[in-house]
Image 1 (cartoon, one colour):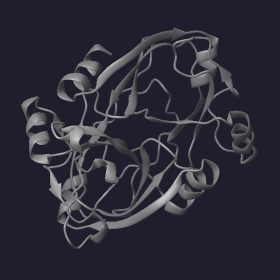
Image 2: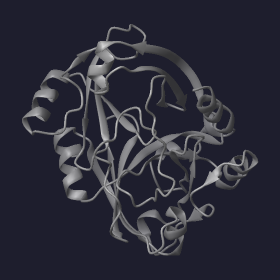
Image 3: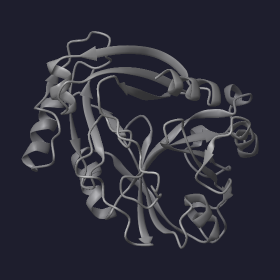
Length: 300
């Protein structure tokens, strides 16, 4: 945890806002893993938050060294910057591990993404992260410089991106069941996209989706190359490959009933009441989306 927090607060300018250590039956039922004790730290950048989890008991299998961006377990968060050259120079100062060969500017041949600059890299545990710059007229208008952003290089988190096998299937799960609304799509290919993802011949169908508040969820469906590996069937919460996307709701019981009726892969042993008063949530449960990505549904 100390190493991870150092990365996110020193290499990147996240602010640590809380940390809690928990153990017990309720957390085993929540995470679907017996005998766990873990630390959870919450960090903020702009108006968005992430959580880092360090499992103190056994587990924590490493991320496969041959992981590729077209594997279906791929997931990252996209951190918005006001100047790509300056942000990339900062990462180079700290010798971060590249995924992309360098920052890429998406070309005119991709109209929906023309002028967007992006760069993939990894954190201290090997998780994928992205820097993204939106030129005027692209992305959420909140990322265009305002008076309070003039001196800020890192602005916040635009979205989390996930590998999907079929866009329409993911739209049903996130849109029809969870209420995350479709925003638009782009078909990306070419040398810039190949070098961004570091996948030769990369051709993607990319779809943006967003709930009422917070960061978006972006689908990455590889049209080529095919053959990205599926989400590991034996993945657990204490494996380093584990990412989870957290949704908040005021209708937890109704949503649980709707999702269980669809016979989805529920990880938790029902809705779990969380005993710790400083955990950040009162009740919740975990499940998997159609491609195996872990989704948490909580109420505060």
